[in-house]
Image 1 (cartoon, rainbow, N blue to C red):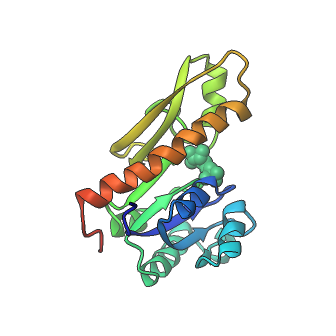
Image 2 (cartoon, protein in one colour):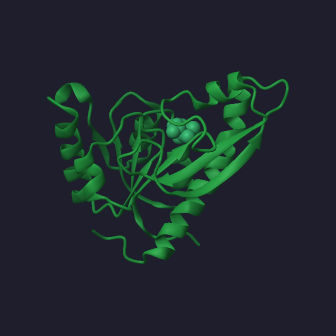
Length: 192
Ligand code: GRF
């Protein structure tokens, strides 16, 4: 049984983590994107999920955009924010409002390969034997907030970026819901 915590998912990419949460019957009450044409936004439209489009060009600054996004998420009654392939750094005004209630999934064993959107490429190029993924709380230090869960993924000698990403994502789809459960149980009321 999944918790009924009201999730707001921030996404910029293809949206497999979003899809996984919806398929596992999580209560995704809002999807916010900075890239209205991304796969995650398309999925939200198909499923009739509340979709907030926050392209940076409509706003004078990152803070302005994040404040607008924050207000919209609060109006949807979001209790827990999940960054699932969101490719922007959240401003302190946003992280302060949802302190301890923002999760991020990153495709490496943090603190290895922190920062940027190319952690899988860097792991493959570095020659490490094992990489993986991490779910952590978001703070103002990028990819450095408290870690909730990690999963290791051994590299294979014939791995390509695509094959490695696929195995890492399979683990993300397992540990992100687990991390949501951990947070939901730890703080039964995630309401602001
Ligand atoms: C994931 O690999 C996540 O770790 C990274 O961005 C990717 C998003 O994938 N932050 P998807 O859009 O959920 O398929």
